[in-house]
Length: 96
Image (cartoon, rainbow, N blue to C red; front, side, top):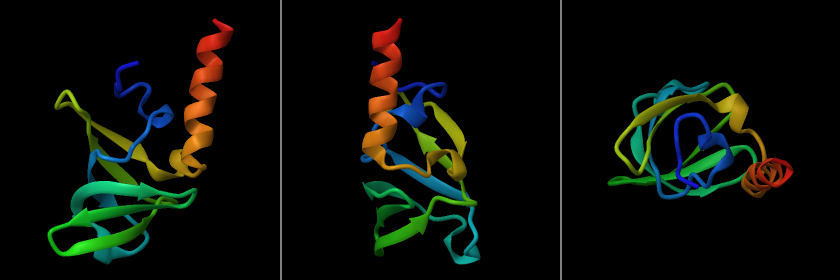
């Protein structure tokens, strides 16, 4: 299934480009990088200056989708283990 702005929260985010629009830590705002890892509560992003862990909660993120479109997500919606988000999407599709 293709990643769209409507279903991005149910897909793997590792590998996507991300821009931190808002965050509890003001030093994180404006960081643009690629997501290299994800846990329940954080993204690990890699930029030219190295890796940085960014908390999801209370953050606003803009993701660049593989087709070039951009979408903005509230980090509070992403606070979950990545594998749980992906499985929820698969279960929804099976019930249809």
